[in-house]
Length: 548
Image 1: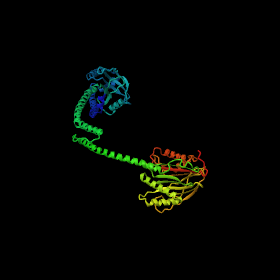
Image 2: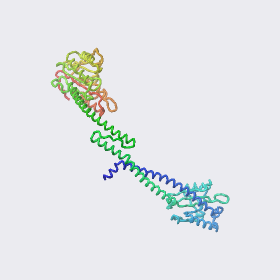
Image 3: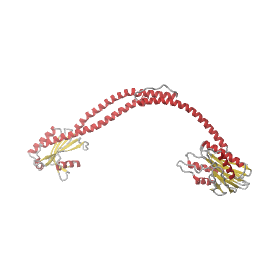
Image 4: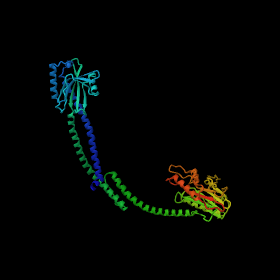
């Protein structure tokens, strides 16, 4: 069994098998064409020879007396002619010689004049027709043949019956005209001859082709085996052994050198030598690159941890405060992101909330985000309204913004004692507001220029009055612009619908509803932007914990 598997996987065995198979197929194709050509040529010769035999038989018949014979005058001449035809039928070894007169109205019937039977030729069982025996024409082919002889002056017509259904043997029937002294067709002489000779003649031809094919296959296989062993198999084995050794040891070996006279194998050998040199160099470089990548990966993990810890991520954030509830979440598209959120108490009565989105992605955006977040927190704790704070932070960013980066920011300061919210936007997304007992709706506030875009910009702030139970939702564009595999975006309408799925829920549950809706929309599509959102609920003085 192992030997068979080895032979199947051997290149020499497979190539030799392909050569032998090709030669066999070639022999079959040649045999088929030769067989068809030989058969056709033999059939033509058979047609002509049978025609000459049938035409000779007409010389034994007096064409002027056909009608008289059918009238019942079975004279001595008729009996003599029949005897001559019978002797001729046996002498030339044909099955039948019969003379008929055809109904020329439609050539669908005929009447027998002479009928000579020689069943000994091919063990047939034909019965001799009597004079005047009437019979329908066999088929349309015979009708056409009869018509051609009577009307078109055809010298002879031939019908081959190779496949018979009436128990007869395959045969050929040749029809020639019997003419009277005026040159008119008075009857048709038909001669039926077995075609066994055609089959017998074809067998030696097929044997010769088969023998030649076998001998040619043996000779070609022997020559090809010797040629391939020297010119292909040995060089390829050398290449294979060297490739296997290199794969096992990963070390440079001896040069393969001139292994063959064929250019393709020479190129293969040179390619193996070059590959070994390049692979050894590549492995060294890869080892260095892998170590560097691992170092960068560790640093990115550390940067991600630092960024995560630079924003509030412990909830509940203010467990002792009953007058408000707040929850936020951020999922970077990469290891580190350019989005940020922040919230903190300026004093016991004022809560600052901010969210931002830096242009770009990756480490540069993360660094710019952390700088912006620190500046916003420090400047907010120094006092002033949201517009004044954004103006100050913008000037600080523009003074050192050599990378020409910018950031969109929404900043709000909520007076927890009165519910008054003062806010300003530096080109950020519209906030979403939900009044107690109502639905979430976009609040189209005034937009100012992004931070870091141009120095000296003054930002206008606006004021909202929150009542106990009101909720505020702020987010970055990664939420509405989340994209599925077909390129469709989640959109603000779906975002509002997700918010209103359970508008009475606590902020944490509201954010979970939005995230679940986003994930269900994008499914397995890659996340291209950071997903950041924050939700706050104002409960007022004496507010109670939220009840679902």
